[in-house]
Length: 245
Image 1 (cartoon, rainbow, N blue to C red):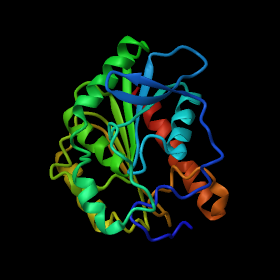
Image 2 (image 1 turned 90 degrees about the vertical axis):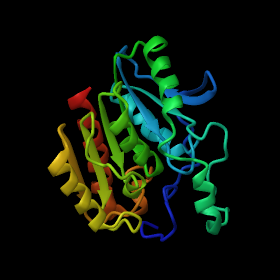
Image 3 (image 1 turned 90 degrees about the horizontal axis):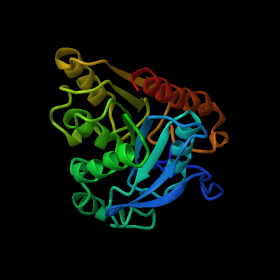
Image 4 (image 1 turned 135 degrees about the vertical axis):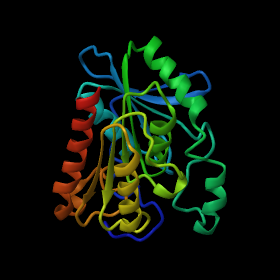
């Protein structure tokens, strides 16, 4: 299963048995999943979904994990009502589908969610994490949005944005060594650009043997040999947020 060669196999894992601990809310024109920690906090994280959309239980599982670690976590529908990708769709149509859902055109929605987190949830320090399509969106936000404090891009597609070095905020990049959609040479080129131009803290980490989507697979026991890296990726994500929020 871990080596399933399909575009963006982010859905790998037993997910239908997980309902989520949070609730769905309407924030202006956006639906969002929100999970809050048991204790009050002024720290929040925006979770940006992959191509399978905001309702994917695997992604909500990560949002709940962030809440367990003391963050107000929200996963908005950044497709804003447009259908998420389905495995039953014809992959030949994927490029056309993607053209109407740009990871670099989410600023309006992010501003709405930032306002909600600050005014309705009392958040003062806000970070962002994202997976695959959402990982690319994190890269965009770290380049453009001054109101976020830190970001974690998990197997975010590198090729979407040309200028991948002048980040405004500390950014952590998580990649899988065996990710067929993000070649190691692309990661090496990114590291070189960051080394030359980036003025804020950053880290690029490649996890041995891991394929696309590994961190937000919920049932680690599908591939027991991957479990340590899945757990390490999640811990690294939390530690980065803890350091900068």
